[in-house]
Structure formats: structure tokens, C-alpha cells
Length: 141
Image (cartoon, rainbow, N blue to C red; front, side, top):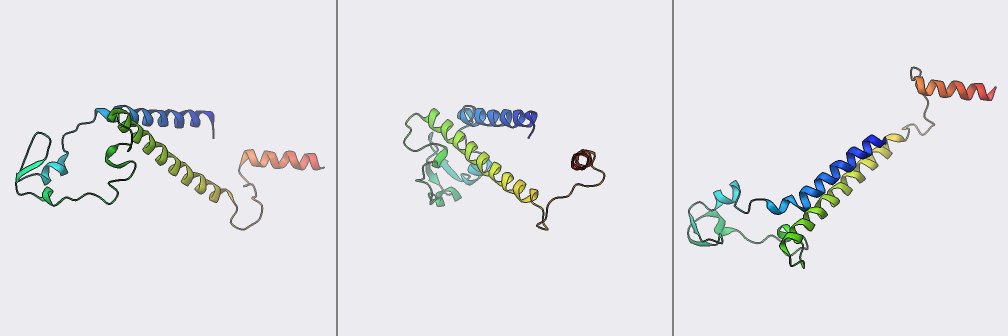
């Protein structure tokens, strides 16, 4: 990969880490469209706890992975909520990047091997490979 490609990749990763680690702490804590639509018909208090009425949100249950290490946009065991949220975002970016990079690496490796089992041959019109072939032929004679 060219140096320019590595710089672009590193810059994109750095921006993603900065957004996930710092800026994510400033996201709105108010319910989004789905949460607010599920609360229609209910009365909620200042902490968004349902205190009356009837709405679909009353049927909500904890997810099976609610006690996992990265549940609820934080890292379990980290008491500082700013650090916990930022750390979970950074870990999410790194895991996603690792999975994506591994997938692309596997696809690249698969595409680099010849399908017929023989050595790859240069194409006729390719100036770089035909020049290499000519130099090898001149050196052999």
C-alpha cells in the first residue's frame, strides 16, 4: 500500500477514535424517535421513569446481554461515566476496524493467488510486466 493510502487510513482511524472517545460523551441524553414514540400514552418523571398511563414501553425487558462488559454505552467497572463512555467507544472502533481490516486482508489474499494453480503470467499490454519480462529475457541470453 502506498504511503498516501496509509496516511489516509491512519487519519480516518484517528478521527473515528476522537469522535468515539470524546465527542460521544456530548451526545443528547434525550430519547430518540423510537424511544419517544414508545412512551406515548405514559406519564414519565424527570428521570424518564414511567409513573402512569399505558404505553408500549411498559412491556420493555432487559436484553440478554445487559450485564455484558460493554452494555449501556459504557465499560463495566469504570466508575467515571465520561471515561467509561469514551473507552467503550474507542473499543468499539478498534474492534470494528480489526474485523474490517481482517476481512479485507483475507479478500486480498484470496484474490492474489492464481485460480489454476500455476504461476501468474503477465498480460501482453501491461507495460510494467512486459518490461520486466524483456529484462529477464535479456539477462538470460
